Length: 175
Image (tube, rainbow, N blue to C red):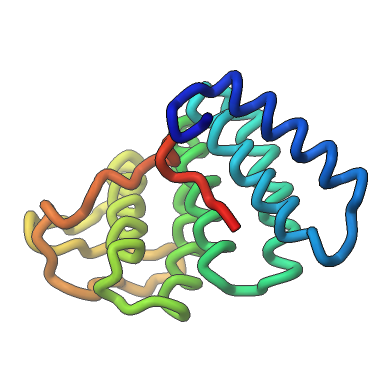
C-alpha cells in the first residue's frame, strides 16, 4: 500500500503487523519488528506527521543498533531521522544524524556509492541552511563536518545525485 501511496491503508496494515509481531516477540523477529517500525516511519513521514515518524524511526534505530551495530540499515534509519529534522528545520540535529550516517557509510560503502553522495548532499544542504561556510561546486561536493574534518570523496556530476532527500512511498525497507 505504501508503494502505491495509499498511506491510510498502509498505516492500518503496518500497525496490525506490528501488533502481531509484538504479541509474538522473540529474539528471532526483532529485526522484523524494527523493519515494521521503519516502514511506519516512512508512511508517517509521507503523511507529514513528523512527530510519529520520528518516534517510529527511533524505535527502529534502538533495535537495529543493538542487533546490527554499524551497518547500512542503521545508516539508512539515521538518514531518515535526519530528513525529519530537516523538515522540522532543526538543521543542527539533522546535521548530527547525517554525520553519523556518513561515518557508518564510509565503513560499509565505497566513496562513490550513491548513498554516500546523497548523504554528502544532505550535509551540504543543512550547512547551507545553517548559513555555514560550505564549498559546493556543480561537479564536486565538499562538506565540513562538525568534528573539523573535511569530506570530499569524489568529483561527481550533480545529475548523478538523485533526489534522496526524503523517504518516499518507493523507499520502504523490506526483509
